[in-house]
Amino acid sequence: MKLTLNQRISLISLAGALVTGFVFTQIYMNRRSREEIKDIAEELALLWKERLNLNEEQTDSMLDNIIEYTLKKNEIIDSSMNPIAQVRKLKAIQKTEHKKLKQFLTDYQFENYVSINKELRNKS
Image (cartoon, rainbow, N blue to C red; front, side, top):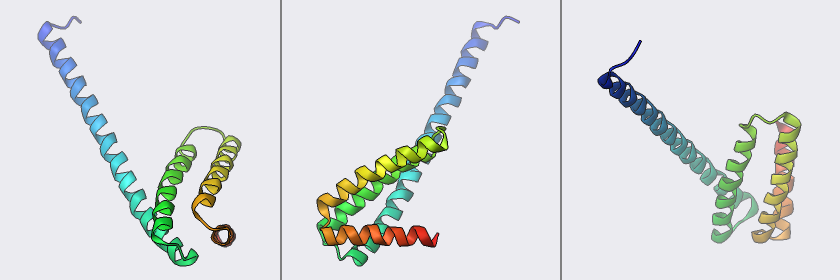
């Protein structure tokens, strides 16, 4: 079956509209997901502020850190790599995250952070 010029143009236009709709949907969902992560990260940063007695600058750094590493961890968790590779990558990310935390937390705050995280993992 041979398509006329008008039919080809219509088909290309329809395909373009579908692709555009898909792209906009992905952008919207990604933005919504990032907004949800930001909202949760703000709550977590306030909890850490209370638990670790953080000042405002430390709280802002903690917020940035939570967002950055949540996105990195989610990317690995959502990937199709095998579970062993995921665990290795997640451990490497956690190591980097801890180095960054040590840049703005005192030694005492960092030790409490690690201790609280261990307690939370053991309760899960």
